[in-house]
Structure formats: structure tokens, C-alpha cells
View (tube, rainbow, N blue to C red):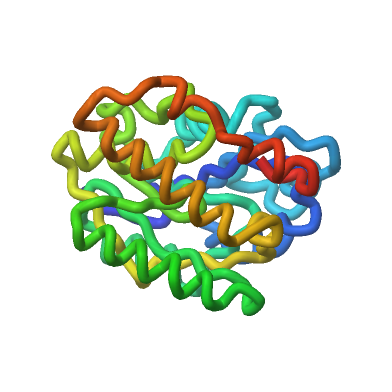
Length: 244
């Protein structure tokens, strides 16, 4: 299916992103659709509509991260749905490259951290590539996308997951026989690394452990309670951060 800029929708959840949203919007191509599912107490939603009133929809909802992404995807009109976050920016040429070169059913790309966490960024992106070569799509919700019909065919996000809903979706897409590509040219860059500031080692262990369980759960039964609890992820971050 042909992909054009006008057939791309970007879906992001937001919560109190005043300090990042202007920089994020500056990296969007004006032709793509933007759908925001906002749970903010600040003026994030107003800033978005003031800066980008065209091709933009803002939905107010207090839904959790998985449901917020699902709500946005269901409202989006594009044939391709790109999922991202407000604390990153798309690298120059991202959407032009996507429109010209995408040919599979789904994709994900690297996320570069700020200079402070350069080594983590190198490790994260090397790990993504290594897992991809092993047939495991280690996708991040900050930078992944898929064709609308594929999203609908697999049933969208697993709404009972409080975290790692992004990787689980792409693993499921691949298990259903769809083609998932890792595309290094489609990169995003962090606008801040407040999540990493609360513990790099903890984040690595948390992500690796949960994503391993999610992968295994696709083939053998895993207790639901192991997957549907955030293992303290949000409680620690929410003590310091207003991000989802």
C-alpha cells in the first residue's frame, strides 16, 4: 500500500508536557495528522492547538497509557499510525523517509538519548538491533508504527498492561505473521531524560525482565498478575515526574 505524508497519523499521550510540547511539535511535518490524548493539569492541550491548529485533534482523557494510545489510534484517520511521546523529537527527514521507503506491515526505530546518557543510548539501540536479528521486535512506544488494518486485525493494544504495551503489541503483530521492520533511518531523539534520571540500572532491569516475560507469554502460559502489575514502575516515577 502506498504511503504518503497525508496518510500518516501520529498518536501521542500527554500529561503536563508544557516544557517539551513546543519542541516536539516543531519536528512534525505539517502534512501529517496529529492525535493527542491528553491528561494534563497544565496548558499542554491549549499550547498544542495554538501552535498547530490544522490537522490536529486533542482528546481529553485520564486513561492509562495503553488505553490512551488505543483511543488515539481509533480516532486517527491515517492508513499508517505512528506512535510516539511528547518528550522526544523526530529526526529531520523522518516523515519523508517513511513515506518513500516503508514497505512492510509495521516498523520501529531507534531512540537517541540526550548527551548525558550517551552510553545508555548506545546500549539501548545496539540491543534493539541485536534482538531484531534474533526475531524479537524490541519496539518502543516513542517510535513505532504500523498499518491501520494490521493494528485492527491484531486487536490493538492489550489494555490490561500498565507498561510495556508497546513492545507487546509489536511482538503480537509479528507472531500473527506480519512483517515488522527495524529501520535505523527512522529515529527520534529525547528532549529530556527524566525517566533515566530516576535510575538507569533499574530501568534496564525492569524493561528486560518484563519484555522477556511478555515474549515467553506468547508461547507458554504466564500468570496474569505478573504481567498486569507495573512492579512499582509508575509509583517511583510519579514521585518525581508528571509523565505517563
